[in-house]
Image 1 (cartoon, rainbow, N blue to C red):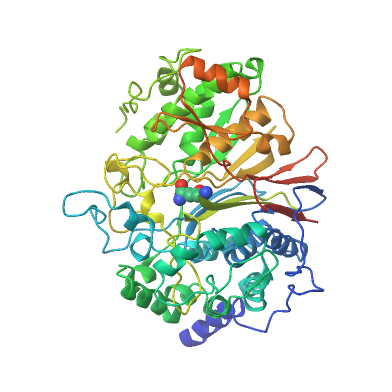
Image 2: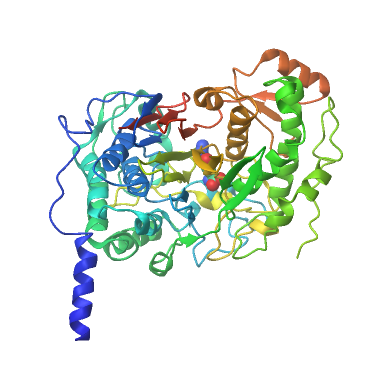
Length: 573
Ligand code: DON
């Protein structure tokens, strides 16, 4: 009797995975044409919409919505498609965070951040003189944490409607038959050519004898085979069996430390989302091990008592106020934030009104603060990532930020398995005070320990308006992520901008250390001069963030917007 039950359960489980072949939606005359596609930056849809870093991935997600899937189905299919068409950041060898609000009001925070391997140790990136070797935390095999994405996708499947084998099929087809690459992708691949050669132990598809150019077709047969193993065997198709074996063999060839047991033991975790209010809007964001939600709450609440609107959009006054809030929040990040399973993060103290009022007590309008004088608060209480936003016809909101960390991660492709590994270990504090690749410093809270998750800045965020689901938003950009989301929300709430303007207007960023204000090229020149006169050091830097957002308009239509800074594109129906 027992055996029959088990057989029955096994049959049910497998039908979600390996049953009949799934009809393809990818092909020249199908819903998704991988050889001819265009970028759509802003569109309004009646039912559901997806905004992501690549047109093909958004189209795959929208196709799932159209065939009856919900926002979780679309998010899963879009992430898998991104792993193929956007190899710099889309991934199965990285990790991420999913934040969602279901129509019944349930909030879901799914943490599938990479974890340090069991053989990792606090000083693993220090040489014999105690100097940090960030080249090892940033490149090659030792830089990779245990990938979390596939565990995260299967954990998200609990809330989805369609069988997994359908959700992964477009990604398999895109990998197997290929897709044409954009100019931006061609340039990125060409720029990483030397690193691919240096950090791989086997030839990889990303290196070819001649340079990549726009319109070339990228075919990834080994990746297709890996995705098929996942289609057939579920998460075990990645964390056990042939794929796991290939990862471990790759590690052994390149002095990496991820082992079979590390992969087998990895799990996604549910985290309580962080909730707070800003000028009457309910905002929901991600809790540790991301610092994103706390930083967002701190920065918004530090400026809430000032009339940012009257100060004017990107006037020296409003920008100065916002910078000083950024400075103080990032000082707290360095001291107090890390994986909550290893370090007690004082979330409620850090986001309390009393604490944040006291934090701004030494703020002086029209005079630059100095990070040497702004220490982390005392608490008494015991550049490639990618974001996708989805809203479905029922009003489920999903916001996912996922990453390999740097562009193409650690640049190492798992030999025979065709996917890139992350360099997320660099998000740990490899040595107190030594900046990571985003210039962020940290200490004990974010020190390396086996099984620990490295502190992130990813900030998938949702906003309610008049107690109704309204907005899903997020962006890549390393430490600039929380400031980008912060500024987009201020643009929406305080300056009443359109969604396109809110995400596309120039951005600025301060992160405590280094004590610099970074601005995008288009930042208002007069404001820059005024800030310099107040004593700020201002540096121009390449674009900040690639924000993807969708909102529900009055009347119920969905407005989807993709950042102008990349190939980002929306789709829907
Ligand atoms: O988790 C983090 O905060 C970083 N690994 C994100 C990296 C990133 O956004 C790179 N994008 N440009």
